[in-house]
Image 1: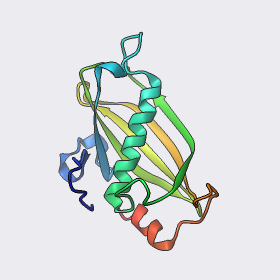
Image 2: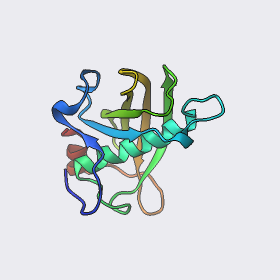
Image 3: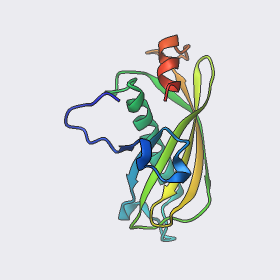
Length: 152
């Protein structure tokens, strides 16, 4: 992974991951904030999508494709999340990320949310990300980009 000066890397790789996430090459560390909970006293479902976005960016940073906001242009084409257990503050989620499949213009990321407080997977998610040009039109991944996305 390329280092960016002044940026803390909230990424676990190697043996630092729990066994449930060993098949995920990148694990994003996501503390749960008090304000992430809703009126039902658990992390709001919308917050998981923000966590998933941060985890996806951590994966892209680990590949070396992204260091700044302008390194690559993508569009989120689809997103889904399946909730298994409620999460409350205080907790830290470990979000495992891996490439599930690659298309010509898209990549499907699979994620697993592991609660350190519960020692369990509490949610799973998929996201389809499409590479786009400056006008927002989809475009094919170059061979070197495909290699970077899948080499982990």
